[in-house]
Length: 414
Ligand code: C5P
Image (cartoon, rainbow, N blue to C red; front, side, top):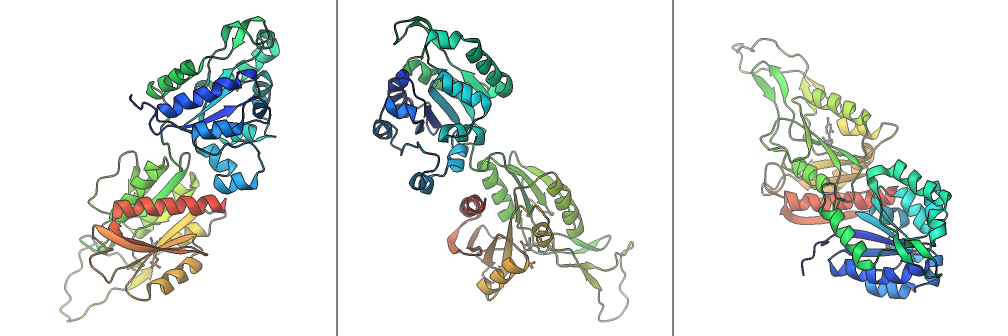
């Protein structure tokens, strides 16, 4: 059997109707196709089918209460709202549809739907008169009007109902719902499988060296290759973020689907960061090796030898970009780097505090096999209350781990 839903994260919402028994089969069908299913039940649903059955069939804990400390300790309701690629509500009762169309958030399922940006498929099930009632039709039309392409209404079918009535209101069979789900994931506009923990977030990353012009042909710079920043841009993109990479001069290809803005000097990098920050930023990662100083005077002509054995260039300080970002009123989650040759942890922890950062990545640049211009790196990730060593590995694997830590700390911060 092909696992055509392999990796799809599906939140199955079950509300309180007699058709809830079909949800057990639906859950089994979805998991058989490779989907990862998490079940949320309303109180009413638990009268028709037991949470224990749904837990056994989905292989995941079932979520019922909005304020349940043990469930929140596993996956909190906001985390749960961000988790799915698709939310399927089956059965969706008339009462639930009315409450959803009003945006009510007085139970777990209502709250999740309000907090989630995932696509929703509603599978109505109710008595035919209730379905045909203009109030229910108005509620369905309101949902379609508001959510447009982000909502699907599957069914109901015509037929005999549990109460003996005949008409529209029967919930689709599990196999049919499952094939609709498969159809969604293979259509032109599918829910994005694994859209990631940073979906909907805007991340700004600085990378590479800066060049500080001395005259038209000379500059002051450093050995940064930009590899770490570019790898972080790819890792954030893979978690679904919109990524803006503000890069000093380096010879790397821009990762796909990342917006690169190329700059040369620290002043240019500073101005670009501030401009992009105004367009919105949830996470700022400063991996650039920004020159701390620039020549005080930029000569517009090539400086000639003056015949003396010594010469000096007066320097002035560049703005500290990451500290400026961290001092803005709506500061994003701000991550800095500390490249040190000695007393790594002490200096890095000092910078974390002084620059008001949320996280600092410390690396030892006295070792040429890691850090500047090398393929690999090993770092210490330091936050106010935590310090973790990430062992030596490729910069791309390391950035996946760093981004996971950023997600963990950012989630616990909000
Ligand atoms: O103080 P130091 O230069 O060691 O701090 C390193 C951190 O600060 C890095 O995250 C670097 O990108 C950032 N930085 C900056 N602007 C500067 C200097 C450093 O954003 N002018």
